[in-house]
Image (cartoon, rainbow, N blue to C red; front, side, top):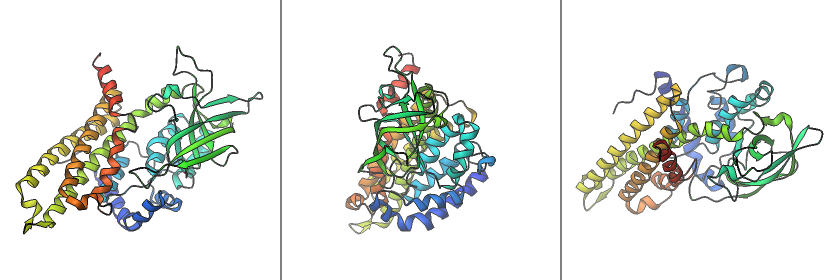
Length: 385
C-alpha cells in the first residue's frame, strides 16, 4: 500500500541516510561485527551528518525538529541494508528523551552540544542481574552525602547496550529505602561520568545477534555522583521510565516491521536469481505462496506501525496501544524472517548473507523493551482483565 506517514522532507532525509549507509557502513560492517561494536569515530560522523541533533533544540546545536519519524527513517534504512548504527539507537532513541524532558537548563547546556556532535555517547542502565522486567525490584542504591554535595552509588547493571563505550550513563538507582507497600517509590536517575572513580565495565557480553552494538555488565563501587547530575526529581524515576517506554516500544515496533520488510525484499531478489532443477526458485508455487503470505503480513505490520507513528506525533499513543503494536509487529517479524530464511536454503544460514543477520538480530525484539508476555499483560489490563 502507498504510505502517507512520511513527508517530502522525511523522504529527502531517507535518501541522505541511504547514501551514507552505502558509503560509510556497508563496506566496513563485517569489521564491526568482528570487533563487537562500531568504532567511536563513526559516531562523530553521525554527529556531522546531523543524525543525533534532529530533535535537539537549535540553542543546543540541534535542528529543532519534533517527532519520531526521522528516527523511524533511520531504522528502516538500516534494516533495508542489513546493518545497524551500533549503539546510536540507544543514544537517540532511549537517552535523548530523558535529557530533553527532565534535564534542567544547566544540564542541557552542559551535555547536549556534545551529545549532538557524537563526542559524548550515552547509555541507560536499568536492568540488573536479578531484575529484568521487574524494574521496581532493583537494588542499586545511591546515598546522599552528609554535606549534600554528591550521591554515593553502589550496585551492578547488566545487558546495558552501549555501556562499554559510553561517556555518560543514565543510571536508575534507589535513593531511598525500599518500601514493600510502594515498590515503585524511591528510584532516581543519576547521570554518571564513566571516568568516575569506582565505575568499571565488566564483561562485554557476547550476543547471538546485534553484534555491532556493545552490551556489557557495569559495576559501581562508591562512585561519587554530583547532585548536579540528578536528572529530574529525586524519587520520580519510575514514572519517568513508564512515560518513555511508549517511545522505546514504538522504536522496537518500527524495527520489527522494517526487518520483516527487508526480509521479504531479500527473499524475492534471492529466489529470482537462484536456480534449482533448471529453473528459478521463485518460479515454484511454494515460493510464490510463501512470499505472498509474508507480504500480506508485512503489509499489515506496516499499517500498524504507521498508525502508531501518527498517534505518537499527536500524543494519542497509549501504553496499551504501543503494547499491541510491539506484540503484533515482533511476532510478524519472527515468522516472516524465518520463512524468508528458509527460502534461501543453506545460504540463509551463512552470516555473510543479510537474511542470516536479520534472523539473529530480530529474536531480541520479543524480549527487550518488555517481553511479549509483558505486552500481553499490559493489553489484558486495558481490557479490564
